Length: 210
Length: 210
DNA sequence: TGTACATCAGTGAACGCGCGTTCACTGATGTAC
DNA sequence: TGTACATCAGTGAACGCGCGTTCACTGATGTAC
Image 1 (cartoon, rainbow over the protein chains, first blue to last red):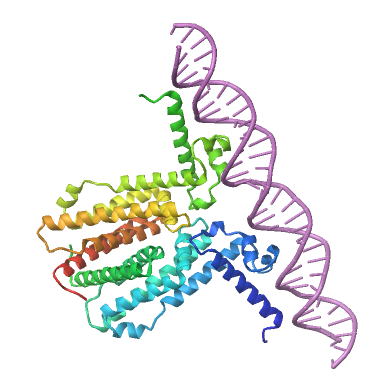
Image 2: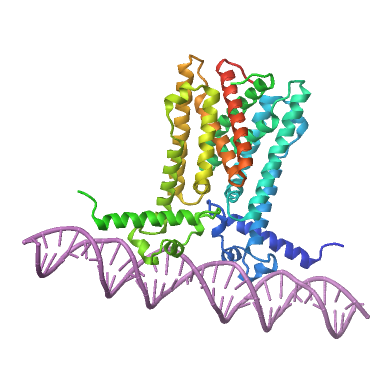
């Protein structure tokens, strides 16, 4: 059955509310300090109307975080095959490039996710942890496949992926406060660090240790 | 001139206020949601008494962050010489061990710092950024000295240090929600990742690339 | 050492304000016949 | 197709509450003579 006019209207209003909330988070404000009336005002709605879309403010926050997770995942998805074909050095550049673009376009999303990953709200935190773990798992799987396709020795892919995400997130956090030029430098550094990581992984794969 | 009884009393009250604020942050609450009356109650003071110690709530927040920075720095200070003497593998273990202990004892401090590093309050953010940069700089200097003392080729120490801090912080964030056993696993992984990093750095130092 | 005055940490009442949420209501949209 | 009724997104008033901050005041501590 097709969506009725009323249903469409409701969906659009809901999206408007989430978009308003997202806009209000710009500038680094915490989710804690986001007010119901404020969101309603930004959405051109009466404060009480929000209760037609979310049972309470917590639900609104969770929906907001969900949408942030969705955009992060969308931004970091890529063609796995090409990842494998282009080789490690290029793959690193592609990965960091993709992440830099995400930060440039969705910096506030990222800020919100990292903040709430440490927040007091368990549901928010678990949702985000799960999303980040997925990111690590997928990256690890890619590394494994790429290595396997080249007939190299097995590297500690899970560890590489975890470290890679940590390095990129660290760079991402610094990028939030940086000029475009500084962001490029940070991205270059992140590439270098990921490369170092990958080189070290190959060493470990052949049995070398510190 | 020695401290008078009144001065001592005032200092102690101030410390009590900061300690109360710190205790209230346990459980991952954001600094945004910390209330004046709440801190006063926890300190067994009238709400208005706080104004004898801090001009406003922002100042209290900044003092709290300052104290967190101080404890982080204290925790991560170490004998540089021993760091150089014990060799890279042990140095990594020592570093991660020190950090793990810090997290175990001051997890809430760490949470607060990472949260506010992304907050909307510029003074808080800058204060924390500065502190973290110091951490990276000191670590980079240690790496340089250790490498030099062994007559090895120059590694990209600044990059190694930055990546190392990112890796440890990432692990630290995960540790906050973990059991002691899981923390040990995370610490082991962090060690492995730092080792990988160091191995990669040595490769780069002799001109190898991906 | 004793006294008179100054300082100032801590108090309690009061301010205006925005918070999240509830409630009964309106009126346009959807549905059943 | 037209009509009568049901649904439900959006409204505005009201709730109790805690917020950060100001103010005039108290009384113990410190200081000058």
